[in-house]
Length: 454
Image (spheres, rainbow, N blue to C red):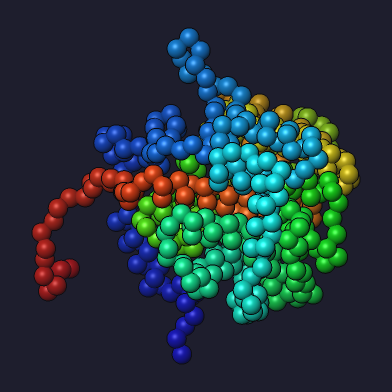
């Protein structure tokens, strides 16, 4: 009988050593040939690879002709994210559906447009007949991102116009996927929870008149109950994660794959594969695990000296996962502050009070204040290091009682709004496949016959 595919044999290990040897490139060559490794310049700034009107990130400003760091700002279609959030919160509304409309169509909807658009999403939340039974329940997985990707690719087979790249059809496909991502993710988790963890199976029906955030909580919980505060904060998390410029890895993946002329389902599956990566979508899980570690190893959470010393040991790779990182601190673009974290902070405190997590929140606040000091002292970094949105989102999901298996899928539930806008923008504007250049640094060699090889 053939061995299972998951078995790594000694032969495979030996061959993998060859892969490593032939795949390793001298790091000095990147400088010699002026290669922007990771599409970043020597200062870590992203290389401009395209134009977009969907969102903008600002982390610097010009002062006397020089570019200097500033408090971070994020704009959706030209609207400051802070003003956008304050707008729907001050009116007591959910904001994610309005944000999706803005990202896709470039303007804020009026009341009728918003109601009509929300109704479209609500009607699209229904999966094909027997899809849950045949696709989700019959092939449960421990990884919800893989479940989500598989479900998206399977939906291709249910679409009579799967390969139609006209804008009306692509928009229809995107809207369906935006509506279905929460259902697919939560149903996938329920299957895992039942078949792997041996808990009862709950498959609730989504409600078309409820918001995306409300449906997530309702579908997930056995009693379908949630508080208004819980739904509002989850809705805020979705808004803050919906879009973040064209240069993040999964959105750039969306542009690259779209430019090849492939279908919407393949494009979104590729974006999901990117987001699944620990360097992109899994950071908030690392934050939660780090906070657990600190709570378990710091005896007095109120003692600045003890907390700071543990953070120092963490940064030096002595404790937790020994990576030398304080997760949730710093960002590839923002220097002084992440506007999403700034917005989130006040609402996180409200939820902490309501849920009885005040001590944990106070510890988070202390870590946020002390970590930049420790990083500056140990790494000699003076440009400024601030908490990013992942520092708080993981804590929020923990307080909401969301399973960790859904942390990254919730990111995807939000970010598909931005992916959809970027896919359409790529189709409308670019008739060329994205094909960056790679310089070969291998030497040419003479062919030798098999009998002459040692």
